[in-house]
Image (cartoon, rainbow, N blue to C red):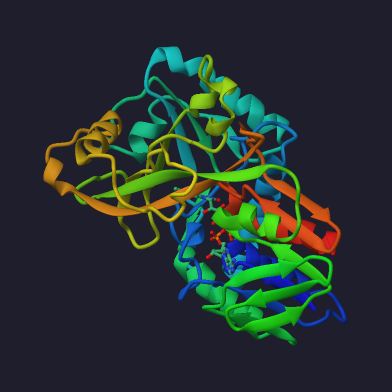
Length: 365
Ligand SMILES: Cc1cc2nc3c(=O)[nH]c(=O)nc-3n(C[C@H](O)[C@H](O)[C@H](O)COP(=O)(O)OP(=O)(O)OC[C@H]3O[C@@H](n4cnc5c(N)ncnc54)[C@H](O)[C@@H]3O)c2cc1C
């Protein structure tokens, strides 16, 4: 039996990829919460990333690029609302313009299709309410999905496969890695292979499996506001901070794309996410700490704001950033130890990369 811990987008895709293998054994996914996607998979920007924002040769870059194409296939197949709207990456000041070149260079080195410098007043025509920026790059394969609907559709698809089971709420409380036996809040089971797709809690599950590396996951909070009167039509991002002078030194920035504006598939305009470092044990702290004025200030960099009251608190999610021996690793950690396959540090672009991660795991089983 194959046992998957975690019913987020990654656990569900892994289950589906394993169910596509001929003569597969029984596959169980267990999720400790009352709802699937209650943690990171239901608390993100819902952006289908193109793959230019990660170090060349990293797992994030490779799996994001592959996951981008696969995600569009799955979204179409499952009839999930999505848009291939593209993304503007902008330089606010002339000093930031050289970093746009870096975006294009990394995009080219990572084989990301559809990236180009913008010409003339292209951004102004597409986004007439926005300020004039010092420069911009367009990424044509970036898009937007309805992540909550995606989770529900993946759940239905998985359950329609033979010998596939999903239990929630059902928490894995203990694992005996020698007897390959798992204790859950709903009883005990034996497994041949266990996949650890536990998101923010993947370090705890790693230790339960007898793992000895000193992984720890630190939550970094991202908060969002809705800008009710904002007129921005699609998606505008700042140039990644790690491409600005000195920014590449900090591995924690690898997945922080900066505070941006995006319109979701339901038509609401969001400002966010912030990046707030939390204490190790505050993985499920989704309270707001950043004041509304900061969201207004950030939004005003992109377009004029005439009414601060039009900004409303939306939601927050926590990025599962993986550290080893106290140092941030900055990339997905995907590896096998005995009967256990671990997926640790699956922060952004994990929503996009999920079907590619699943393909990789299927190759390891
Ligand atoms: C602010 C923010 C913005 C983001 N924006 C984007 C974006 O725009 N595009 C993108 O591609 N990615 C984005 N991401 C990243 C993306 O959301 C995640 O990489 C992805 O959702 C991870 O999915 P997961 O299944 O690994 O984790 P999760 O969704 O957290 O699922 C893991 C599940 O395991 C369960 N679990 C844990 N321990 C146990 C246990 N002992 N027993 C049973 N169940 C257990 C948890 O309850 C949880 O539901 C963003 C993330 C954040 C925080």
